[in-house]
Each structure stands twice: as structure tokens, then as C-alpha cells.
Amino acid sequence: MKFEIGDWVQAKTRNGEFVHGFIESIDQAQGMAKVFVVRSDNEQSAGKTTTVLEHWLRELPAYAPEEEDSLYSLIDLALATRDEAWFMELTRSLPASSGRERQSGGLSYRRRTPVNRLGHTARS
Image 1 (cartoon, helix red, strand yellow):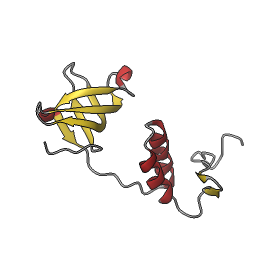
Image 2: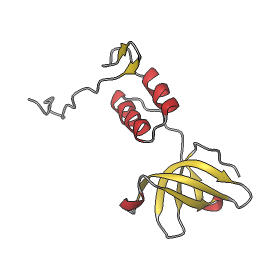
Image 3: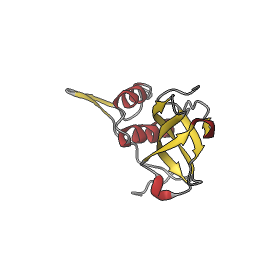
Image 4: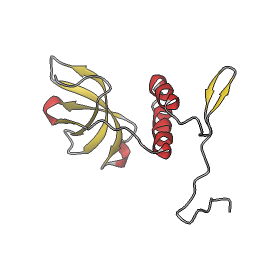
């Protein structure tokens, strides 16, 4: 199999659902992979694991976020999927000027208040 655990993929399931997610495990003998579904055309599948045949998998291109807000979205995803290593990797890549704080006992971060295109926050 040309895929590895942790690869981001898109696939079609046996039920005809189109899913995006990452590989949790691989069964090379049967040519199948378990994919944790992050997004799907069937909303009920999101957040669950599904089994997909290898030839139905398509690797998604690597994504390197350029904006700080994109990093925060990925941090939220890392928290939702309980991927501590990815969370730590993402928080280390935050710019020093962000709302990141170092505390005794670990690293925490503070999300900036969202600003709309007119420069107003939800609080203004």
C-alpha cells in the first residue's frame, strides 16, 4: 500500500459517501484502510471511522498554513482529534507575536477575537 498512517486522504466509501480524513490504520493483507472522517457529504459520518478499499483512496496534497488564523483552525482540529503531537507541532509554529502564553505546567494559547472585513469585532 502506498499510504501511511496519518496521511490525509479523500475517498469514496462502499455506501457511496465522499469523505475527507486521515488514515488511522492499514490492513495491507486485505488492501483496506480505516479513515477517521473529518468531512463528508453525509454529515453523520463526520467524526467517525470508516473502512475504505485502497484503490478508492486519493492522497490529499500537503497543506502548510500561511495565515495565523489557519493555524488556529488546525489547532482546534488537533484538539478535537486528541492528537497531542500534532497540537504541539502546530503551537510551536505560531508566530511569537500571537496570543500564545507559556505557563508553568505546559503550553496554552489564546485565540484572538475574530475581526470582520470592516475591522469590527463581535464585541464592538
